[in-house]
Image (cartoon, rainbow, N blue to C red; front, side, top):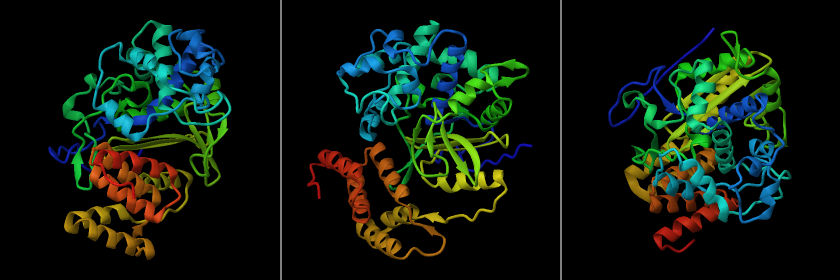
Length: 412
């Protein structure tokens, strides 16, 4: 049995309604598909998980001799020690798109100035860059363009007919455009399209295709009688390599998947967020049930949607947590400026009324929206507001320093 629901529009500027065939960028859920492609190539004898990445990409190097110890398994499980790109660097990257077939190799070669965050294999550091390396390995070991291999050997055999890693393949009249709160809601004018980052975050898909993907997992890697990856490979991807966060969805890190439990049931999942999108896919292997949410509004309110979906799957009641306080803060800004925001935020933080969710993640994500939109003045104000409530967030302090530098403003 399948349940589908669609709401909203593809763009607030040209409001065509979203339907089950609207195409969304599913952001970092892309990584789970890259992991499947790697396992497919392992099964075919092209790759070995514990081989060094440099064996497959002789030009891959870092400004840190320990890079030679990085294996494919470490890259898949974010255990390589590779650094990541911060919010501001990502925005700069996406504002300078590279869309030719050689962009991925150039992107990997450009990592030569980077240094590792830890000894390979010792600590969990989530890294988008690691998946660019994996994507380039797929390309070089198959002799195919990365996006072409994924489409011909994974997406099409699964039956995901409208899914692609190439933006140029997407019919523009079916594309959901990403939206940011800056604080006013607006379409992100710079659609992210850098093929160096394609393996980490560029898969585009539909509700129908993602439900087909769920069917593929229910069938344990087989579709229409044809094995695409083995059940043993799926089990390996869903085996923990590191501890991550508290329950429910992020307890452990697998290979290209997050592992957790919801109401006692095992769940494997991956989310995606950034540049105006919010996505989440979950699969309950013992129940043989899957769910997906895709949105062209970037918001941590997905936590409530995820819990509602997981509650329905596991047969438990769920009470919605309320409207995010960031909606009220944005409205206050548009109606009364910074003073109105400060007043509203203090009141909500001190005594949240019924039906309003005061959530730390939602507020910092609002800041990320502004950083992405290059709304530096607003980002600095909301960062200071955030730190007044959550003063121990050192990453937010670092972001404030960078954003203040753009404005030539004092740090505090």
